Structures are given as structure tokens and as C-alpha cells.
Length: 577
Ligand SMILES: Cc1ncc(C[n+]2csc(CCOP(=O)(O)OP(=O)(O)O)c2C)c(N)n1
Image 1 (tube, rainbow, N blue to C red):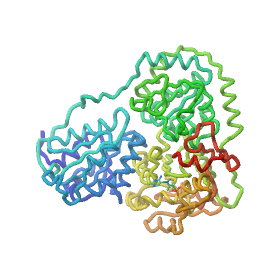
Image 2 (tube, protein in one colour):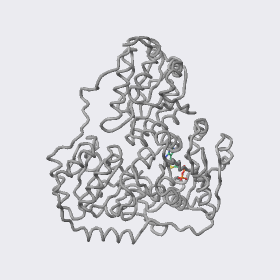
Image 3 (tube, rainbow, N blue to C red):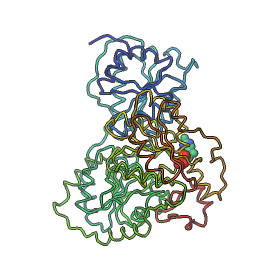
């Protein structure tokens, strides 16, 4: 046992938890933590973000790329509130981010002290749990519990609020033992009876379909999923958050489903007789939003670690609460060694849908299309990069055109749809995977929301690539205005934009530009092969629209496939979501 102050306990416990990088920004109430930080700098790297929102997305990107928790450190009040968007983003996509905030000294709590804010109250709805630590000696246990809660069950953010007097106070430091929390016993294995039922349903199905989500990635279930699908010849579609959980080049993969999913995937959901949903939560963007018309001919098996997702949006026939990897293992054990399946008709139907309306683009004008950019990026990198998209049209084209081969290589803000997430999250991903090429693909709108982090990237000598798609607009807003608001383009165009290449250069990064289709490939190749922080500004056509599109609140077979197939009641559907 050693005596030390709270700020030292903070680092000792982090090191014990295996944390080696913290994304943060100092301020009054955490200055003691920053004061002792140099003692630990050989074991914990501190990345000085330029904005706490940036730090939180970095921690989130780190968590998503590594599977380990991402850590944020910042002061109280405005710093803590700056993390809220990042925390809510992590929560919606089930990412284990642990945020440490400084707080006013305990005697000042509730006095409207300088930089006091109710961190606990503000973050209660967007964290899985949060702690206000009141005694120095309680700090290690609170930290250890925070990591335990964030990383087990459904991964989620947790906040630990550390008043200044707790950080400067001294006590005996004891590393807490194994965590066991009353009332919190995250499930692992699924109920054998339910799994038996599910296996029977799968064996009886003629047109089964795997509907996979981000839970597959968090549980590391890719190999088990491949074994199941190959043994039973079941086609696989993934949600936006699931991309990468199953290789895009596998013949059973029929690409993404949902609002901008492929025609074949959405038709397959609509026409299948069994949905096997694994680690997906049936949100409106994945199901079209018309829950009543979802998969009308199908029975539904729903495998999820979080019992709260069961029957939330879609009433299911066979719920299984458990970790996806464990449940799939249990299923594989229950399956007969040899299964005869006849999927000729079902797979033939899917192939027909793929032929009827493939994902496509027509790059023959003099303006660069974003779909062409992403397709080219996918080919140049052979699907080997970690691609972090931001939010908007480009995000959907990344999902459609980048051929993700591995889990944790596609990172995006799916649930909250947080513009400004992409670039800092890509930086976090690069800290997690220094061995991989990491590419931030962002829109001009999204990049402007956290572009200050260019300084952090250069300061840390990062080798990171930014493909910035400049269409001069909030493209996705413009798309909705084109489709649902009679082309009334209100506040979606930028009259002023920086010269992004000069901006990058002003931070000490390298900048490249491409304006014509014939220059694209060379620009991407040059940018991707240049060491350091490289921003490639690609000028793209603002009139390109993402298709297919299920209008908000639509059923999955009601897709708008192109400009000629608008629905009649376009203005009404926009009111849905
Ligand atoms: C923080 C935040 N504010 C507003 C929105 C609403 N929104 C969704 S997409 C979008 C436009 C995105 O523009 P850009 O980043 O340039 O990407 P593009 O759609 O042009 O590819 C907006 C404003 C959002 N998702 N997040």
C-alpha cells in the first residue's frame, strides 16, 4: 500500500486497466492531474485535443478501431458540456468511452461556482452510468467500475466526475479487486431453449436472411457468422453499423440494407421468410421506419446483448438475449453436422434483384461524382484501409461503395449522425491501429465542425489521410430539399468556404486538390502514398443524389431508385423523419 494523492491514483488505476492513451484538454479543476502527468508520460500518452468534442470523438474512434475503451480527460463546466455530443454519439453506437471530468471542490457544489455544471445530471441520459467521486480513497474503485461497466454487456460511455479536492486529497492507494456489481450481471450465453427454437426455425426456413448489426463487431463474431452462413448458405445483409462484420467480397453478402441500402438487400428483407437479426436494433434508418410493414412474410429471430432492444421497434418471434459470438457458437453446436439446404430459388431471386437494380453511377460528365471517388478509393486501397466517414451523402456512398473486408475498418456515427465526428474519430482510430492506413472521408460541412483538430494531428506527427469532398453544400440537406421540398434550397449552400488546401498547409499539413475526373486517381494515389497529415480536397458534383432511397417512414420495398421514380406524395413523406 502506498500513500498518494487522487491525481496519482487516477494514473495508477488507468495503467492498471491497461490504458496507454488519453485524449484531453486541461483546465482549472484538473490541473493537479496535469501537474503529475509528466511522471506517467512513459506509460500513458496524452493527446492534447483542441476541443473537448474533438477529444471525445478521438476516444470513440480509438474504441471502435481497437475494441478497447477510449479515455477522455477534461475540466468542468464548458469542457464537460463540450463532451456531451461525443458521449451521446458513443452511446447511440454502443462504444465504450470513459470520460473523466474535473469538478468544483465539494464544498462549492451547488453554489454556482466558477465553471460549475451538473455533469451527472447532464450526462445521465446519455451514459450507461456516471459517478461523482466524493472521497479520494474511492477514486480507484470508481475508475475500475467505470471501465467494467463501459466495456461489458452492451458497450457504452461512462462518466467519472472528480472534484478538485478529491484529486488533491491524499490517502492509501489500493488497487481494487475483481468487480462484481449487484444488479448488473451482463449476459453471455443465450438461453439453450430459445437457441434450440431458433435452430429449428432456421432449418425450416426457405428464404432466410441474416440481418447483422454493430453488435457483431463488438462481440467479435465474424468467424462464427461465416461458419453459420457457409454451412447453411444463408445470405447476409448488414446495417450501416454492421459493415465490416462480414467480408464484402463473400458471395453470400448482399450489401447494406436500409434507407440507402441496395435494392437487393431491401427486397430480400421484405420477401424473406426468416429474419435472423444479430446485434442490430431495428432502428428506423435500417428498417425504413414503417415498423408495421417490416418483413411482412417473415418470422423474426432477434439476438442481442441488450434485453431493452427486444420488442422495442419490432415484435419478434424468437428473442435470444446474449453475446452474439457466444450465441452463434451455441447455435453451431446444436446444428446437425451435415445440413442439406436448397437455396437455389432464393439465391436466384436475390441475384435477379441485384441485376435489375445494381448500385451504379455514371462518371462521364466533367464533374467528379462522390460515388466514383469512393469506388476508386476502395480499389486503390483494396479494401484494406480503416475508413472513417462523417455524416451526409458521402457517408452513404462510403457505405455503398467501399468494400469493407474486416471488422473495425468501417467507422461512422450511425445512430446520432454527428457531423464533425469523422476527422477526430479517424485520429483516434489511427492511435489504435498505427499499422493500418486510416482515411477520414468527410464532407465540407462536416469537416468544418472539427477542423481545428488538424493542429492536433500535425502536433502528433500523425500519418493520416483526409479525403474532403467539397460540393459547396450541406449535400444531404440539399438532397432532401431536392426530393421532398420542391428544390427550395434554404440554407444548404455555403457562400464562403476556406481554401481547404491552404488551410491544411497553414497547420503544417500537406494539401492536394482534384477538380476533374481525370485527375482523381492520381491525386488519391499521391495523397495516400505521402507520409504525414495529407488533405485531399476533391471538388464534387453537388447535384449527385444518393439512391436507392426509402422515403422516411416507408416500407423496405418502397424505394426511390432514381430521379424518374419519385413517389407521388413526396412532400408528405418528408414530415415523417
Ligand atoms: C451536428 C449536426 N448538425 C446538423 C446535422 C444535419 N445534417 C445531416 S447531413 C448534413 C449535411 C452534411 O454536409 P457535408 O458534411 O458537406 O456532407 P455531404 O452531405 O455534402 O456529403 C446536415 C447539416 C447533423 N447530422 N449533425
